Structure formats: C-alpha cells, structure tokens
Image (cartoon, rainbow, N blue to C red; front, side, top):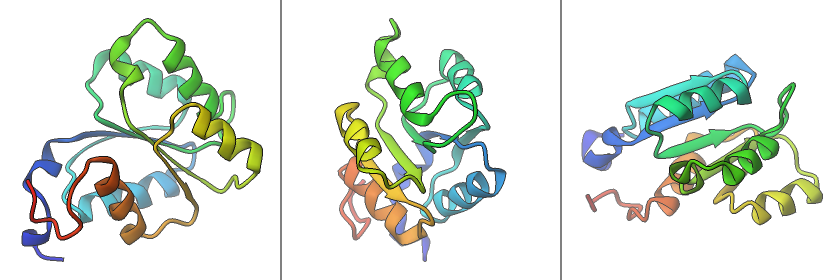
Amino acid sequence: MTDLNKPRHLENINCLIVDDDKFARNFTKTALFQIGMKNIREAASAAEAEDILKTSRVDLLFTDQQMPEKTGLEMIEGLLKSDAEFTKNIPVIMITSDTRETTVLKAKELHIREYIVKPVSPGILKKRIFNILNIEESGNRD
C-alpha cells in the first residue's frame, strides 16, 4: 500500500487497543500502522484501559470481549454509565472470537459500532475503520 492510499488525518487519530492477548494486540497494532494510524496505545486489561482513558484522549477504541476480571462488554457498559462525557462518544470496534448471539446483541445494545470476529484481516479492519470515520474507501478524502 502506498502513502497515497493513506488519508493523512489517520495519523492524528488516537487509538486504544484493549486485549489481554499480546499477540492479538500486536496484530491489530500492525494492521493499524499499515493503514496510516500512528498514535496507538495498548492495554492488557479493562482496568488498564480505564486508567488510560482517564488521562489520555482516545478517538477510537478496539476491545476484545473475553478478558479476565472484566469483559469488553462490561468495560464499555461501565464507560457509558460513567460521568465522563467524552468516554461515551468514543467509537468502539469489538474484535473477538465470541460469536454468541447474546454477546452480539449486547454489543449492539451498547452501541458498539463494529463487531469483528477473530482472526481479523487488515483489509477488513481498514474497511470497518473507514466506515466508522466516514472515509471513502479510495482514501482520497481527507
């Protein structure tokens, strides 16, 4: 992929990847770099993510569902109930191996914008991000 296919403003988006699996975080991070995102933070748990969200601006949140202590859905539900207005408006993409209907329906109820089943391809990830951010697939729109 050439730089011409990477919208310039993607490098200004602050992302947070929440997944207890380091390999999965690295895979997602690599895919994000490939489409031009550069400001990427990582959290290995919901608690770590919540701490980051208290102190850092996050424009796009990626989360796994199945994590120890608190699931991705529980984390998102907590953010929606919190007093911090800015966390309620962060677009969320769930990347998980959990395909249970109850989980998918709960994600929709919590307004999770995209639900991607692992393993995810960089192309699918790009398409879903572009959909959320209203970017033309050709990448010509800044």
